[in-house]
Amino acid sequence: MPSPAVTASPALTAEIRARLGRDVTALGAAAGLAAVGITGAEVFHATRVDLESRRSRGLSADMQFTYRNPARSTDPGRTLSGARSLVVGALGYRRQDPDDPPAGRPQGTVARYARRDHYATLRTALGGIADHLVAEGWRARVVADDNALVDRAAAQRAGLGWFGRNSLLLLPGLGSWFVLGSVVTDAPLDPSSPIGASAPAEGCGTCHRCRTACPTGALVADGVLDARRCLAWLVQAPGTFPVEFREALGDRIYGCDDCQQVCPVNLAADRRTPQLPAEADTVATVDLVAMLAATDEALIDAHGRWYIAGRDPRHLRRNALVALGNVGDGADPATAEALARHIEGDDELLAEHARWAATRLGRTDLLVRHGSDGGCGG
Image 1 (cartoon, rainbow, N blue to C red):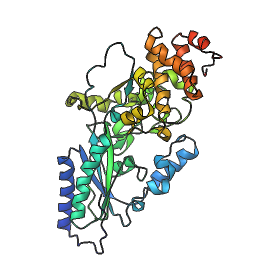
Image 2 (cartoon, one colour):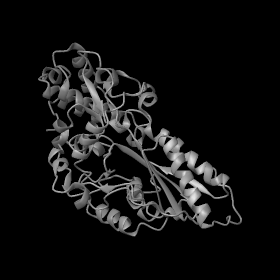
Image 3 (cartoon, rainbow, N blue to C red):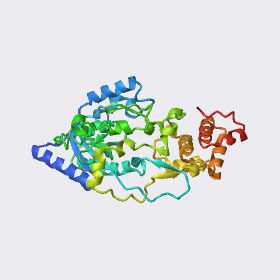
């Protein structure tokens, strides 16, 4: 977003502040945002302490993102010097599943937030707000899905919702199927009123469905996620996929929606407002055998907007091998050929996951045929 140098900030009377607040809220709504809130740009001290605590306890695993530099990701002033306000927006991605994939082909499931580039849409919406503030003589920058700011903390402070027991932000009456982002500006805007509950006890009550539904027990306490057990992180993490969580991965190829799918707030929102049809460019499933046969270039072209460790497509193939071991058919020639090709390949990371998948599908003959010692990572 443009960030022109401003030598003197324009005067901002109460009337102008109120108009600017109405302007940015209206612009966000017109651009398709489900909620817009305004809050101050003070340092998120409690969030910084929380990030550092979770990192020191190992709960963040090797995750970087906002954990890389908590002093930066909790201080909007690091993004824009002189920052005084945040305009926070939530874009919904609750949509119907697209048409069923071709029958007979093993498919990997993509989490809802990653089925299309929702963040591009969010940035465009927030960009309109930033452009308006710049036109009014202020500086503004868009921050979304960026390690520069903890989006959830900004949204909670702006009154958009509360932190659920699944650690996600829930919007009252709307749920958690949202991507979040902010406009950091030096305009001293008036904070908006909270949209709903601000504390877990008010929003979640006695419900613990998310914690019960988590396939790996990654929600180790209310609002506390252990990334070392979280499938959504493990598919992004580099190296070997932990053996103890491979069966739990099921058919997932990227992300995990289980804790959101059982949430009563989300279910109630579905009953009140039927889900819209899926967009034309939605990718809800991926052909696993085709994925394993694709070139590096083809995989990056198709899935490069996902977070891929080291931008290395072998991590996508690793995930595909685990998913294939869970949902594939060992008697299918294409599946057997894909496993055999990786068992006998030069990449030991992929060979190990292929051996595991072959063993799980009852194709130990592939291990013998290709001279494997039968190791399958447990």
